[in-house]
Amino acid sequence: MKMFPALEKKYTKEQRRALEAQRHAHEIAFAPVTFQVSRLMVKFGIFQLLSDARDGLTPDEIAEKTGLSRYAVQVLLESSLTIGTVLYAGERFVLSKTGWFLLSDPLASINMRFNHDVNYLGMYHMEEALLNGKPEGLKVFGQWKTIYEGLSSLPGAAKESWFGFDHFYSDNSFDEALEIVFSYSPATLLDVGGNTGRWALRCVGHNREVNVVIMDLPQQIKLMENNVAGRTGAERISGYGANLLDKNQPFPKGFDAIWMSQFLDCFAEEEVVGIVGRAAESMDENSRLFIMETLWDRQANDVAAYCLTQISLYFTVMANGNSKMYHSDDMIRCVEAGGLEVEKICDGLKSGHSILVCRKARQHA
Image: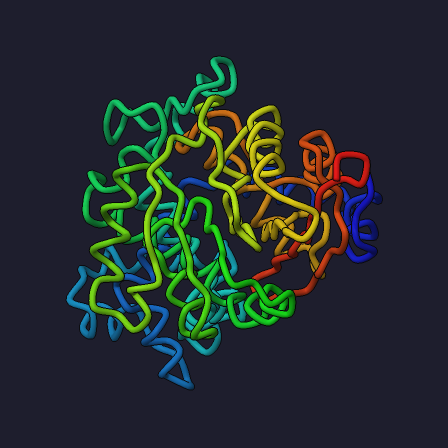
């Protein structure tokens, strides 16, 4: 299994001494507790108060400013002290670097809300999900086969956090992705799994001639139509309702470009091969399939790789029970099994994305 150099250095040799490893083991054992403590330190504004107070604050001062009881403040602060998000100096508590990142890093904030609102209760059912190959944690929200069928019916906080998470990881890469895709001068683009139409809107805004068709579940098409209505270029965006897991559902033909952003990670390998294969059948030798994914092995640092491999378990427990954030070798193998070849890989887009530019395999052209 190959990895980018920074990851290989981190993950092929033991990094911790014995006591550090023991400490880390206990951090894992208490992870549900430390997660909730840290989330509430943000929600109750304690991290922000400490960030604003250069000389730190006493528990009584924090209790007065937050309206919390001294007991509540005390247990949160003492836990946070041993977690490492606050420090104690001169009879006062001050914010640590880790606490500052939890407060200020947009990605940490997005991940925390996503895990609390979408994943937390369902993760109790991880064992069942792994044994059964089904998203057993999803039952905390409803009786759907996949989370995608129930997106429009999720509770408000869960829905908001799900879309915030999804859009954060994709939208930050859109500027660079537009340059890559439109360097091939497509006049027509099929956006597969286009969700609410955010990428389609960016495409018609970037190029005044391109026409975009979004292929997604019928209920998602309705959400998309509502979202793009009245927006600039909306007249060049249309929907094509389809169940992408239906092996008998062909892809519409005649598109210069097919776009799949954070889409194939929603499917098991055999499903990816089938989807790519149907895309290949709709393509000619001049068409290109652009696959944008956060491939965990192609990350510049281990923070990104860590986040992505943990996100895989969201797919296991909550989303569909059988997909993940892919290693690039696995994705390339699926692309080739579907009848395409990877012509080029563009790495290093924002939010850790890579784009696989795929064309029909020459023996099939």
